[in-house]
Figure 1 (cartoon, rainbow, N blue to C red):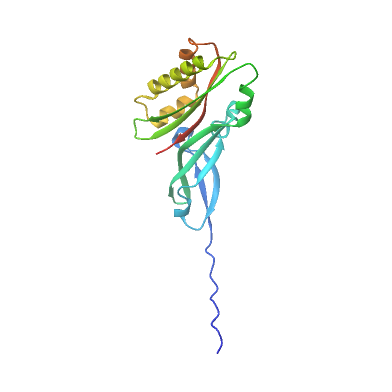
Figure 2 (cartoon, rainbow, N blue to C red; figure 1 turned 60 degrees about the vertical axis):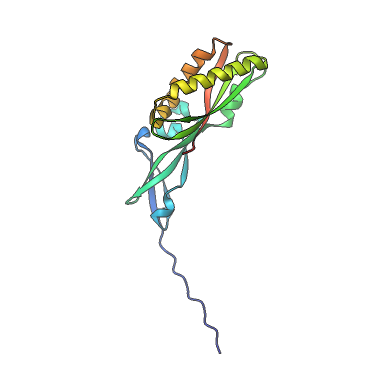
Length: 190
């Protein structure tokens, strides 16, 4: 008796979905992604440099992560999911005879998001541990005060325009002279 052969499965035709940036970045078209079903597109993450989103080449060292939240027709709409500085930028900031101070803090926003901010502070000269911890405490305090009562969108726009970093710099430089303050990485936790 002959065995039954397995039937040939037909491949579904993939559709191309256009990925659109959030309103904060002007809803620009970023790229396209193929998928068999629109449900598979939701949740995908896209990395884009901030200079591509803003058109300003000064921001090429910042990589923004966007996550697809919904699909309508053949357009995938994204939301902000985080950002980070490229390692070359951080290596250029940190040099000999200077101290690097890292501060990591989780912050709750007004619109029920939880974000993790990772800051980096560079001093003009090398400092001892006591001064490092004082500067770190000041960074925590300023970050909390700055983000209190703000929604995610306004915090993100303030980070990209360096308003938050300037305020932290102004308050922490009273402890010890600083070279720079940067938000090294942000992550949206929920």
